[in-house]
Length: 121
Picture 1 (cartoon, rainbow, N blue to C red):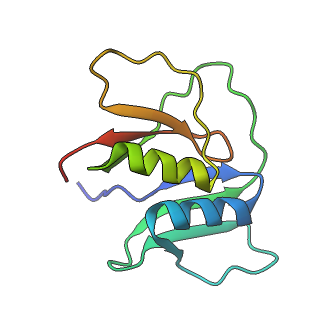
Picture 2: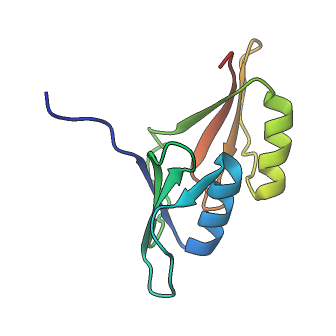
Picture 3: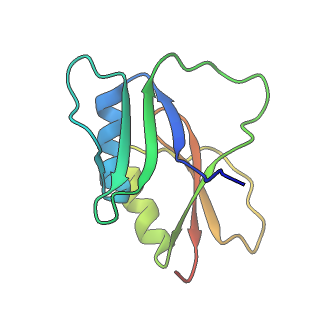
């Protein structure tokens, strides 16, 4: 097999806002310079230079079906990270959790869902 997983691509209506959220949320940085005409940005891990998230400027429609893919973010401090991400602009959509949930569902400023998962890294 000659494939490897690239990175997750999120569509955004506000590229600057999305860059701000994801760079602060995960400590990423744009791979290439961002200018007024930029419509696609790859965010990399600052240390490894590995591509992590791509942001694509475009329209976001409300899906007719539930979202079937989301990102899990692992942490040893779920409550602290949830508070930090909410302060950065994430939202907490209504969600029914199981009694033993080790995750919290959030959404980025464009409404893309992701989970903050308690995990021994």
